[in-house]
Image (cartoon, rainbow, N blue to C red):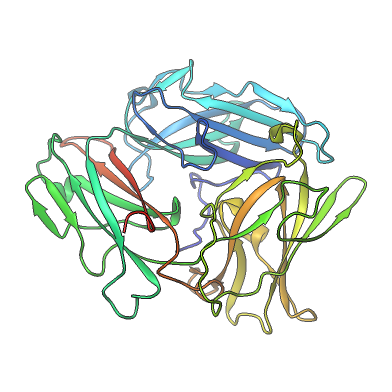
Length: 409
C-alpha cells in the first residue's frame, strides 16, 4: 500500500485543520460504506464538525469519476438531475462540550438533486460556492446491479503465504449486459475492509465461460491477512473506559492517555470482534446527542520499542486518520522511554486502529512488523465490477458484493 501525495482531487482527504469527524455513511448504518443503489431511494448521511464554532457557507457537489478515480469525460448535467451545487443548511452549535464546534449534516441525494448514472462519485465540500476552497472530499459509490458476483475466501496455495494471507476467488456473471469484449470493457477492483490504499486492481479473468468471468488464478487477489484491529473506547471522558490508562482534565481541554500498545507480531492469534478499522461517535451517558454534545480530547498513544525502526517512520492508521500517512498521525520516538509517542484530537466514540511503518525510500506502509498477518483474521472483501459500453465516456459500476473471510469460506 502507498501513502500517496496529496493532489487537487485526492479522495477521502481533509484540507482544513478546523474540519473534524467527517462521516459519510448509508442512512441509518453508521459503520457501512457509502455504497448505494441507483434509483432505489437510497441515501447517504454526511456529517462533520467545524472547530471554528461559527457558521460558514459550506457547499457540496458530486464529480463522476472512472474506475481509477480520474474525472469522467461528462458534464454534471449528464449524471445529476437538479442543482449541481448545493449549500449545507442543517447545522447545530455544540453544547455541554469544552471544545466548541459547529456540527453540520446533510442527506444525499435529496429534493435538490438526484443521481442519474451509476459509478464512482467524488463528493467535494467547499466554502462560499468556490470549489478552489476545498474543505474535504469523500468517495461515494452508486451501483446499478446488473452483474451477479459469487465468491469465497480461501487460503493461498503458496506455502509462503498459506498461514498469513487470504485469497479472494470469485466469478462475475454478465448475463443481460451487452458486452462485446469483456477484457477491455470490464474492470474489477477488490477492497479489504473498504480501504482504497491497498486495493487490488487490473485483474484479468482466468477463464471466460460464455457470459461468466472466472477470477481464480493462483497469485491473483491475495491480501495480507493482517490481525484484528486494536481499539480504544472513548465514549466517556468521565469514566475510565476500556483501553484508557488515565485522563487529565484542564479548564478548557481534556487529555486521554491510552494504555501502551506493544507490537503483536509474536503474539498468538486471538479472535476479538472488531469494526474493521472504522469508528463511530457515541456517548455512554444517556440523554445526550453525540453529534453536537460529544466532546473532544487529545488522545495520547504509546507504542513501546527498544529501538526505533531503521529507515522507517511509524504511523497510527485507520478511518480515524482517513487511511492516510502524514505529519498529523506520525509518531515520534522517545529514546528515554523506549517508545514511540503521538497524539490525535478525537471526538467521543469508539475507535479501531493499527500501527504501521512507512519505508522512507519507497513510501510503502507495512503493518507486518507491528501487527503481523494471520490467515484466521476476520476481514470484509468488497468486489466492485465496472463496465464501459462501446462508445461510452465513463465507467459504470454494475456490480458490488461484499464477502466475509469467516462467513464465505
